[in-house]
Length: 81
Image (cartoon, rainbow, N blue to C red; front, side, top):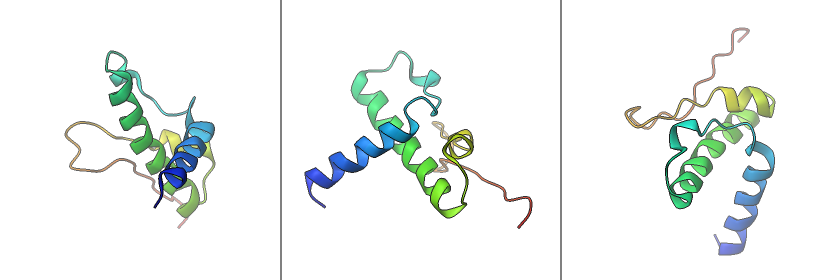
């Protein structure tokens, strides 16, 4: 994947999830660290949006990323299915 592709993906994640992903636990982190964590969380929300067929707000609310989560970044439970 080229750097151009990565920039386009990052721009789409920022456009779609910038005000929706909770970053309060990284308020005092460096800009570089905040950007890295945001992209990881936004990508998890994007995956939920696409595969669970939920809107951006609901997908972002399912992000549960933390420091001791064993790699789990989001959880969604489909009550109807």
